[in-house]
Amino acid sequence: MLGTLPLLAFLLLAFGFHRRQNGWRESVLFASIPWALFLAFITEALTQFRWLTRAGVAVSWLGFTVVCLVWIQRAKRADQTRPNPDDETAPLHWTEWAALGGITLILAFTGLTALASAPNTWDAMLYHLPRVVEWINNRGVQFFPTIDRFQLDQAPFAEYVMLHLDLLYGSDRLVALVQWFGYVGCIVAASLIAKELGATRRSQIVAAVLCATIPTAVLEASGTKTEMVAAYWIALAVYVLLRWKRS
Image (cartoon, rainbow, N blue to C red; front, top):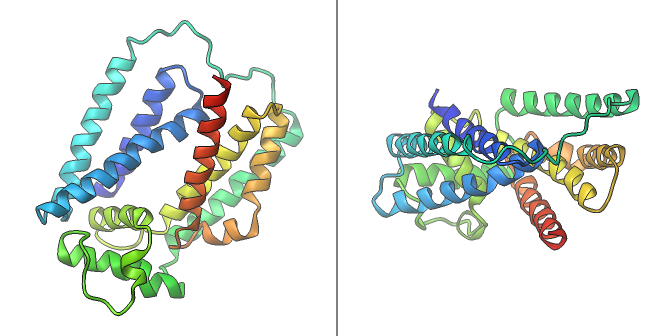
């Protein structure tokens, strides 16, 4: 149950952004920004007091979820007169349905693999997950003695998420979902980047299909590497810059 708190907070953020006149795709991307900022901040803050424990993380996410609920309540009173920019009322062509169905199948199979398979890649065993175990033992993300410098000098955000999921769920069963959600985010971001560049709905779906079928992305979507997470933040930055330039 505790393992669902980060997902619940994210869904509430996405719903709140949608209430503020953003399309669902934009809302998903925008929700990831405050969600990630909170996760990084609370990880570093709890480290200062050696409170990076299951109880400390659970209380933090519970408080953040309550804040998200309050934010949604305030969003209900926002102006609802403007049309949703993501609404497209024309029915989907059968080719569009087929493309979206193919993406859904890929996401379903990779997500199931991420949940059913234990982490087993060599680099996950060498430094991605060992650093998470050390952080749990130390109750913080401070440096620790090690013979592998990769456990100390690699960008830590993806492992921060794995750390929270491991603490809340009680095992590493959910840690592969970090890459999977990054994969999903890349697909959504690719379609929105195409939209900002003037693509039609069909072309946006083509962009999503191209992103979803990159062989390396499919392989890494169910593992404990970090490349899909990094790719997501790059894609999000491109989309936000394009949207900022337009507006």
